[in-house]
Length: 323
Image (cartoon, rainbow, N blue to C red; front, top):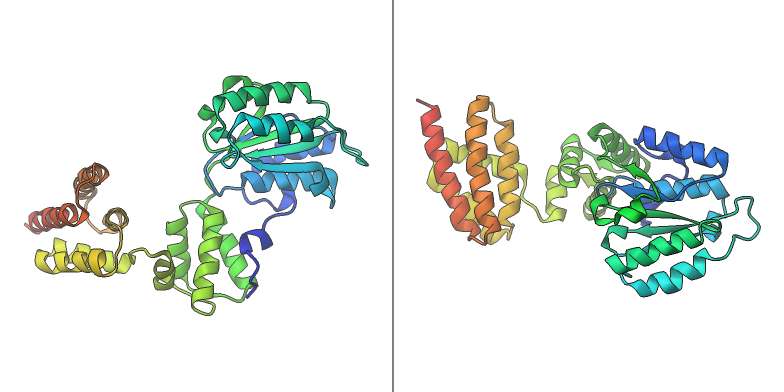
């Protein structure tokens, strides 16, 4: 197995290699063919390929030496107006040397964390240096970007990657690295990453390194420090069968001995409830119970007491279901 970060080793290098987002990629390819791009605003959840896509576009546009024509900044590290006055202006005001493309590209990641003053300064810089520099702003939430900037950009919205695409990519990487990835391990990676491919790849690499290239469900949840679905399902079934004391003891073991977070346990209970072979009406009722406990936890209530109360309610619900 490679010790190089797999997120970098398997990062797509060209737009043709980018996973999913067919409509976005098609539009960007037209910009590359025309050797001209507008200012860009990429918005969407983490780990869906926003930064990878602009880097792939840059490579397609400039060729192998593309790093000479781009500047990457992370706005979460440099949120204030000084970075706009100094780094951004210095880079943007000069045309690229020895390039058929007459402009450079400045990539501002997490642009939605810029202060309002910095965003207004950035807007003026975008207007002033548009001949020599194009800006690609990347963020999770477009509503945090001021309207004058949005109106100057071509906006591209990136949705979550499909489970099929993430599954195929993780299988591909595991095969390339010689990792024995069991289906249960892949399912656990997908559940933990929640549509974030970067996170899924990092989990795979960490899990593979911890067990010499063997990855199953238990390995994944162990390296994440999270509760195993099998343990939660067993606790849930004990409660529904009316064996409340045994279920509560299992809960105490998860919380006190394994040191797991109450929120993680509750999330797994909810996931397992949805998998139960019970009428939909009962899934709704049980989900309402879980929602009530979730709210109490967010208000600072003690997890052991609240989750214990949930198990008691589930035991009563199980008794009612058996009538």
